[in-house]
Length: 109
Length: 118
Image (cartoon, rainbow over the protein chains, first blue to last red):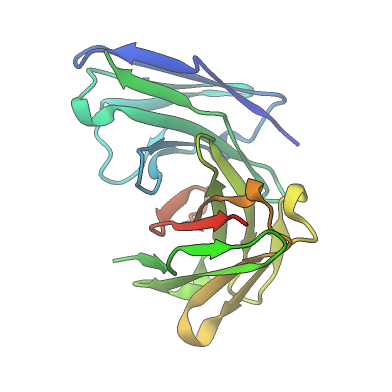
């Protein structure tokens, strides 16, 4: 089973600052199947980025994804107050079995 | 618009089973795989498995094999997730979600809280 390690575990930032979130896989993964979500307490997760770099419909362009192989990055430019929450990466293998990373908490400084 | 509406909160005793439903609307139910994901208190997201509503094929995470069953009723566009032999570690919010072509979980249910307590 492929493991995803997210770092840092948490980030304390102010609105207007930028954030760089990392997702590292235990082995090379299918870039087309690397996805990022935002999750807030009491809500369902929200799809942000799929296929490593494609923004989901309605996602602001301050969110961007990049990477390939084992290393992937989610970048958030100019944090807005509503951007605070937990961010997860997720991958799927060829059998369509999914794994999630442990999450990165982006909190208000 | 795509909507996934899940059944209400449940309280179960250890050793019991729980069955959560997920009613879909706004799209062709048999056109997209339906995944189940859970989040225990203070923990991250955990994938449980999927069902292909078109035919009923399933794929379960190894952790849940033998204890989970995902089914569907296409006549009412509803998927079900049944988890048996519950323990306190199964206390969590359970989500259903549709998967797009890049296995991105693009539409989610509102979540169902399952509490396991004696």
